[in-house]
Length: 198
Image 1 (cartoon, rainbow, N blue to C red):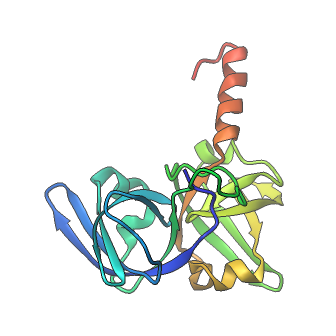
Image 2: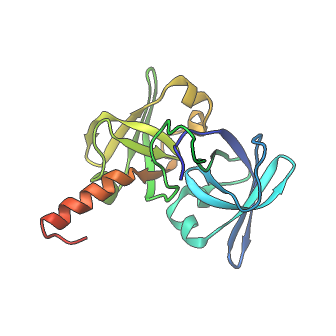
Image 3: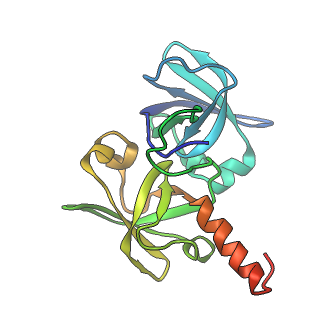
């Protein structure tokens, strides 16, 4: 479990295809990363399989490559990193599982104020509400008031812009989207109450 508060930005060193998926290596300034721990890479929960001086590696499954932007990464790509929540830590963002629901596409970037508009598929858009929470590339963000035709907006504070990979955002970029788990539970509970199934 994560909070969506990014601890650091890493740089992809390599992606090597293997029969079991892809071996992803990342350079990072984070210290104390150990084998076997969970770490969110652009919001995707991964297990650390190797560590080195200033780097770590994980094995990415084919399904993860298909539904997230990890498959779009290249050496030199910047990725958001967050280690798993520890018992007793402050929950400063919102509950993020690291289970990405799909990708969105950046359709607009504004600098004053800092604002990003993202388009998502209908199966994701139906869960979004103004002032609700959403994880974009693992970053806990608040949905803005404008939602229309599969698009939503998020406003970015300068700290998040400068300390995540958001500053590298361009129109057309694919970003990972994780819907607020509470929104999914409530939506499905109400559907079942109306006899609509799952």
